[in-house]
Image (cartoon, rainbow, N blue to C red; front, side, top):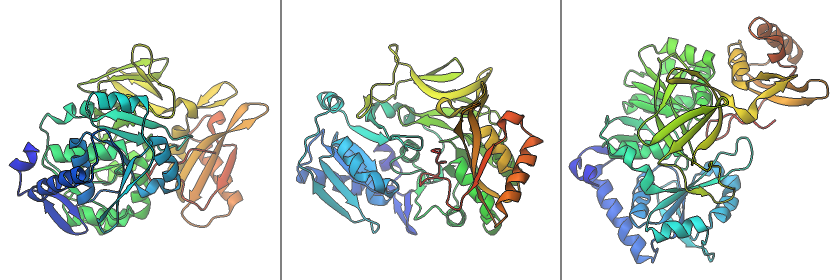
Length: 441
């Protein structure tokens, strides 16, 4: 809060074209502290926060942390799983923040008695629970000790005007919020995540930092919305959450050669590591920073982190006996730099040869008339597995001629066993509400 007091007259949050200063945020946090106490919300209570970024959702988040509650942020992106998530998290109280930023409180009859919660209460620490996206399977509930996440934000860094593109219930979104607030930056919130709208916000509010995903960068390129907006204020674009197709990165860099493009890396279980890309058009990245150790064992990245979660609510501990987390990410190593090839669980085994979906997707994404592509495996009685592709095209094209054109295109750029055997044209978007590819076949 010292940062807030020292920067009372600086912009803290822009929401629905209205600007809120740090002085307002200070007073609003105090308001919510008093309200929480008056409602009898005690330290250690598991509080569901149904919200997206807004003035009240930020202030309430900070007040609940100060109260040593255990927070479970949930956005509308998980609406279909909301009841399941609240049950898994053993929510005791819920704060629902509506689209107009009004807040409603509701109580549940259940008592949260998970062993991890008991440990947090005994230590009088605030915690928070994050659910994985479940893009490749069941969503897991990771429980964090909030105090472990804070040390990385104690070192003063650049104060930037940042779009809150990554969601309120995503480790990247929480990282965006804490970075901005700890450096007296300004968070510019979004009412939707349409490319044209986001770029208009960048122009109107002189945004300097856009944290996003490779999927959204691809959607920007497809929309060509960048032709209609002045993006000269935008200095840094960070991307993570999934592998970046090399063809997408190179095209974006060619369009914006002065923009600093940085790959980021983080996990719901560990937090966000500090990272440094070899260059703006390179997929090689150095990760780590204070509080993190990394090693590569059998081509799989492993990480030991001070900010690591305490455990899952609904799954066994994934940590080794010496506290290393096996990420499941396959990497190449070049000195201090890594290149992410994909998830070990997504590798396609074609007659003993390994195929990484991201490599094939990068090639196909370079074709004309391809909007989105997801490459995945299908079982085959002879080869074990074969490469398959779901493609959403930009404009209508005969399915058979497109499939032939795709195979010819791939034949010139990929080894034969990497070329998709089965090609399915789809009309639906191939990403979820978190702008991450949906991998399930």
